[in-house]
Image 1 (tube, helix red, strand yellow):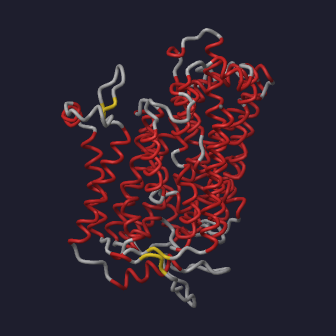
Image 2: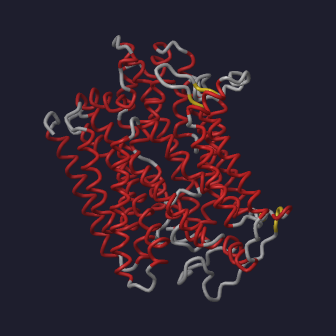
Image 3: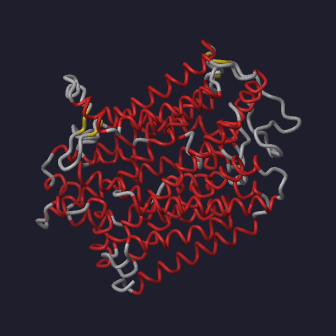
Length: 572
């Protein structure tokens, strides 16, 4: 890596060797497939850093920085779309833990049947391949820009992939969680390391406001692409899809207790939203910095802004800082890729391979899981090489999980949902999404007199007309839910015994030192809890929330309000 200071190279090498060795060392703790895919032994601190590390990566800094650079601080919503969903994490985490499952596909098999579990596994593996590709694409672009092209983006993808595959396939989810603890710290460093130097160069926030004259650049909700409708629909999409992200089972259920999962899931993601603010402000400061230098903003590639600013500022401050920045961004992407890889391997091994080849040894399933990890990563690498931009990759990934998320929520809150209804909802969602991409459909809608009034068509210079993204979300979600409900009502109800087992699990808390010997089953001696219900109209199954649930949920909304209010106050 010619052109980097020796101190930078030393920092990078120490990080890469150390984190890989730690992950491989964790392999000694893996004795069974359960150890590999779902070790339930981590406390709150580890679960916070696991949730933060799994959900936070350098590609997200690229998307937020690129969105902010082009559209102003409203670009923060490319990651803040999950912010309104964050209080719900407090409610989701204990449910995931109570399923006593290894993978989320186990839950679909429990609620519906094995065919729906296999459908989820296929969709989930595709989803995770896209996610890995997104992570690699964003981080490689960042490495390319912050090294001034000395390390090509394609080579960066290859190097990152080899490293996280080595320790991830060896140590499984346990290795991912342990390494996430250290990599999470480095990701925070990555998020804030550059900010003070860029701010100082442009005269702080006052200097930004004086230099950036366009008021839209300083608005959290812009009249451009990221308006109120965009924020509402993408936030709803995020909430619907979060339960169907295959790696969320590990984020919620790898803790010792329900509270470990609750605190880890919600607090880890709140920390992420704070880091997101730093990415956005850094990019806004970069706008002012470029303007002060007389650079035409249109000549700057948005995906490269974060890395180019790092290359400009950090070496001049202290040798080794750029190396720390690169090591930190590597930590961000590797801490996400390892967990995603293990989740996808779990889906294939537990829900596709094991039903076809039952009764094999634990060692056999471990070997299959490791090979499955490698196969999913290869799919992600291919996607990373093919996708044109980081934001386009992110937008594709956004829409995959909700297709199965609708079936999850239907099954959780409505007794009448059936396996055929789950299939129909998923197929209808994908079909509706595909239809919105057809040029013939776009042209037909463009001619309607109400298209402009509803802002149905998004027009951008140099690109073909397309249906505005929030409308795409509304169309596919409405189609999926409507078809899922209608087909469920027209098909044979799910067996009452199956429903009783499913809802008993969701309502029975995890006991102290509870040992799970069979997935999705209450351990011997544990009595199902009969909770009072809040709503049972039309077959709905909404239990009365506990005091812990209500207090945590409200605290989550207070945190959301504080983050949004604090960010607006800071900028304005």
